[in-house]
Image (tube, rainbow, N blue to C red; front, side, top):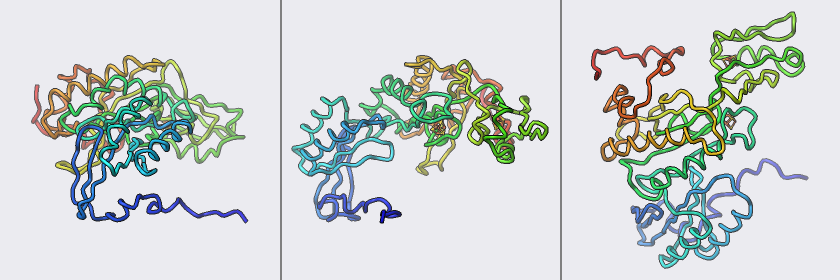
Length: 352
Ligand code: SF4
Ligand code: SF4
């Protein structure tokens, strides 16, 4: 009989003896450089971590090469972080530099520890999903090439989390990242009356619309979209393949800033709209990359030590954010969704 429902392998079985011995008994850790950490246990034993960003989407040959490195320098042990970086767990300090040299030779630069930009969380894009407005891997490669210095060197006031989602489903962390790229559409879906009754559950389609822009059209066994009410979220297309929303000329990216998940100093924050639209420009997305770079450079220069992106904006105010970045403030920035009122200024305190 086929074995089912057996879950993932037990994580403790994949730890080195040193990790097992000191499990739950770590005393402190230090950042040795932007690619290396050391954890010291109560027993006095040390575990070194060498971290490097990966492109997340990897060939099995790459994974095998990582396994070979782990066999050579780490007793066969490595892991992936929640941001898809690889971490080699080194017990013999003498192995750190040779391991780093081999990683460099493979094209992987250790980094992403401390006040850096670590790996950019991202989604499927044009590689695999059917609802994206932008690609994921292509933009991530272009952005990370541009901001590589911030990954290698700790030059930022605090850590800076980059994320990308290729549609407003926001798979991943774009709603809670310091700088986030989100794919957006700008035209309503096209309703294929012929196919809709064969492919879609009409009540589900109607209920999928956050602005109630869709109503049934019983005579045609189809639906009608009130285009004045549609804000191009694409949720109806997720429910119904007969309502495609793609438009290569109008699809593109929005940029959000100022989100974080940690509660350090300030409670967690949602990211907010900074740039409503930048067109798709594959393969290197120069306008988008330039704008992300600008957003990071201004923060790096202006924020105080330890201040996350959203904390910096809270301190200087959104008026000054738009002034120092030089980005235009438009009607698109003003929240007009159901719970928008608390986002309006209800005080006379603001800067000219
Ligand atoms: S963000 Fe949207 S397009 Fe991208 S992987 Fe998720 S559902 Fe697909
Ligand atoms: S794209 Fe979004 S807002 Fe527009 S009709 Fe579909 S579900 Fe409604």
